[in-house]
Length: 288
Image (spheres, rainbow, N blue to C red):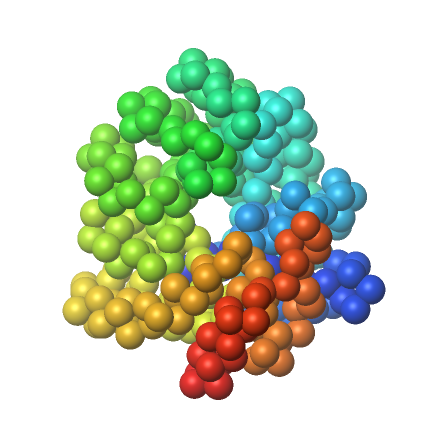
């Protein structure tokens, strides 16, 4: 079980708007140096909807090659088309992914039986762990706790990234699933609160900027120093909130570029941040 900080990596682009594989390798090496516990590629923060299938596969190849077993590589393979998600999952497994993150099917809004069959179809046909990704603000659907409970009993469904921001909902999930079902916060601003209810870490946007702090905070909690973790969560709350002042990953890439991390801009339809947001991010970047 992966515990601690999982960095939801941005996808770096060069000046021509192409995927910058050299920069991606550098970012992965940096996360290894900073002792990040795992990296996630092709997630929401990685702008996957704006990437071609070929680009997605090349990113996975680069991440697996550069990690070289030094850090787990989780790959997002979800879709609202079960056959497509299964095909991608099998390809990414073949390319060397350590685990898969599968989003709840969006737009078509399946009922419980459809949701169950979607995840089980994928989990039945791969050998690496599958993690459920619940993010209703993006998908328009929230998987109900009883469905999560049933899926948690599948031999190959290992856990869940929970990004609803609803702590009562998370508590229900935690109460219904066993200790061997790994729960991760999908919200940087409430990571410590969710860890107090059973989360074993976070899939973090903030970790793109300050991986050492995210790891320090999560491991402080895991090691029993809950007061240190609480204080760190509150200390960086303004910064974390600013990273979501506009649609992710626009703010995180903006502040990374301000700090000289050279990850390029976002692809359309995601445009630059507003002038007001830029001023806030600039001030916070200067204070770091």
